[in-house]
Amino acid sequence: MIRYTRYLMPTTKETPSDAEVVSHRLMLRAGLIRKVASGIYTYMPSGLRVLRKVERILREEMDRAGAMEVLMPSVVPSELWKESGRWDAYGKELLRFKDRAEREFCLGPTHEEVITDLVRREIRSYRQLPLNLYQIQDKFRDEIRPRFGLMRGREFFMKDAYSFDADEAAAAESYRKMYEAYRRIFRRMGLDFRAVEADTGSIGGSSSHEFMVIADSGEDAIVSCASCAYGANVEKAECMPSEPAGFAAKEGAPRKISTPGKRTIEEVASFLEIEPGMLIKTLLFETSCGDVAVLVSGAHEVNEIKVKNFLGADWVRLAAEERVREITGAPSGYAGPVGLAVRILADHSVRAIASGATGANEKDAHLLDVVPGRDFSPDGYADLRMVTERDPCPRCGGGLRFSRGIEVGHVFRLGTKYSEAMRAVCLDPDGKERTLVMGCYGIGVGRTAAAAIEQNHDEDGIVWPISIAPFEVAVIPVNMKHAEVAAAAERVAQALDAKGVEVFYDDREERPGIKFKDADLTGVPVRVTLGEKNVAAGFGEIRDRKTGETRRIELPLLAEEALAMVEKKKAECAP
Ligand code: ATP
Ligand code: MG
Image (cartoon, rainbow, N blue to C red; front, side, top):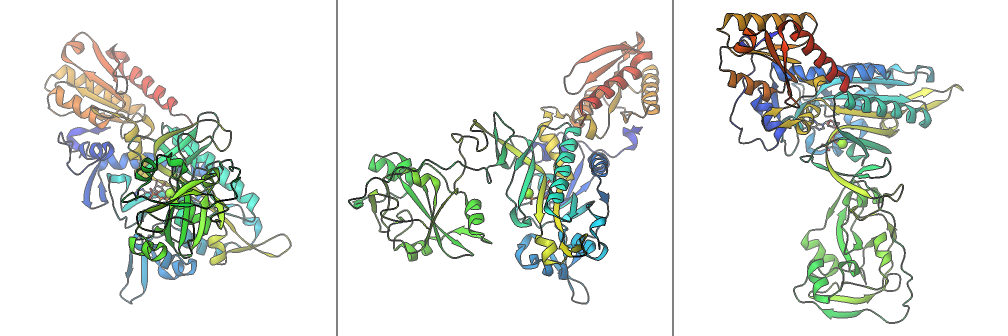
């Protein structure tokens, strides 16, 4: 049992000025964390209790899924990162430094290299597979904009797991197991979440899902189908190809028209009195594979990640004004595909334009009656645009819903990206070498706790799901100086403690209002209150933090009733 007078849980009324999101504000106000430097925090006693509970669920479900816990170092020698090629590719998020002998190291932002090095040394035969190793470990990423408290820190705990299999089919099974384990994990934490298809980003690999906690403050936009199980990050969400318009018009040529000062889609469309969808928007990108023009219907937006993936490029960025002038001979806003001497990619939406308008590659001029296939020929058509609310579900044709989410977990099928680069192999039944097929699976411990708060709070404070609450029951004597009240409170607290309930006993000589406010702020799911009148009459009160529902219970039954309520809440967090 924890007694407030012997505990460090400094709560505050003031809203910290630099905290932009609710979880950050409430974590500070409830005394869960304290900032040391940008994106770097100390976990206070009650904050650490929450993290430990998250970790316990993670361990239980990883173990259940057959993964084995290890612990790798956070300081990693550069050699391993050079072998995988990421020492150069990873960028500034990787904190690099040298030891006294001038050897280069980094603080591990993720551990594919270290684990692949371990496994290539220890695994010989297919008989030792499948193998899944996980750790819960301190990561460091020198994030460009650390913010939102534990949501995007620089130093943070992550559960990361890595699977190794002899072939793709077995790797798919390992992935499925982790996916299922993740669903159990977030259900046990009482969270409303979706698993959505995601881009694989800098970690690489063939396919991946992000686990998103649904919250308006989420940094990610996701779509999910109202009819089937399809869900995707908007970065990744597929768009069905538009019906090709029959390119009937074979004769004639585009007409040049003067459009002084009209550069944006809206300006040009309203000036020409046409629908934005009749414009062939032309964006110029500089990429690691050279300059590329990307065409999309004026009613749509280009999705840079799709462009990058289509090209297989390391990077893509919108061309700067100067480069646009060099390529098109005109300031930006007047680019068009006709006569353009760079590689041209077109989104499927351009196919639906039988005859459209586009920039003339000349200042203050556009072309009308431009026919794709006649006046220009893209080097390829592909899905290169952002999904919209009008798009049908790519799986079933149903309607798509947009929502915002916080990415708390991510599962990847890595294929052989790391095992090939680092030569991690096993011998198959015929004694032949096979490159191991890998998967990797991450969950942010602190971010998950923060996401739980984003989803579960009210104007008074946190409303913890009981499975990750720092304490299960708060026992509050309204007046410690009143001997009977204090004695009754002590008895209930002791009885609950004896039953294994995590009790927070507010034994301070504070006014009841202050104690109630703190109990609400810190979000303890069940509150037991001992008031003077009630105790004199032989009663106490039980209050549900979530619903506010209060019941008056006879003193001898108080602990039992509180315990029943704890059990009921725990059952609601069943996997
Ligand atoms: P994001 O897109 O939010 O930057 P990421 O894609 O870089 O995240 P992963 O590499 O997939 O993240 O890491 C696995 C998990 O680690 C994430 O799902 C998230 O829960 C957690 N995580 C990643 N970066 C941070 C961070 N800066 N602070 C706290 N948790 C993080
Ligand atoms: Mg991610």
